[in-house]
Length: 232
Image: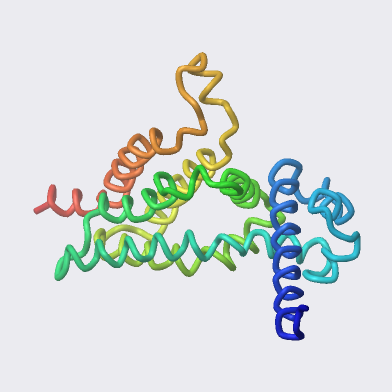
């Protein structure tokens, strides 16, 4: 016989399971079809829950979309910030090198053990979609990722104190674009390489993206230092 405590616990577990299934289903559909083409009915059907539950648990479709986007964002932020803290500590009292900063930003998200696990390919595709969207990019990327990005920009500024804000931010923009395209995993690399490369092989791409971004920041953000040295 199931007592009241066990019954309540079971109900709680069922509720959590339904919420997870809804978010998993929404993640798959939004990453594949974008925001506009997906309905709450389709999400409920894929999640195998009652039609009313997505709205009941999360609200209207924009709120479901935001809940999906938010769910894994904190993990990515925490991994990167932890890596950045270690880089700063290792370099102290000097600021960390741009390579150490770029490694902290890129390595946790491109080489982590989480990548092959269920849901992460879809979430990365969703981040790529949002970051490339004039409707969602400014809102969701700013809300969930800007505090983390600002920490990295502070370290870039410490490493390149004479860099202009424009050079620093446009360099970051290029970094974000490269990472967005990697996250999208469109298969473009597969086509261009005649299937010698796979766009899903993020770990292989990590070293190239790292070198590209390090060189880019050094070339743009170090310009003023080079001018000062040449005049000196």
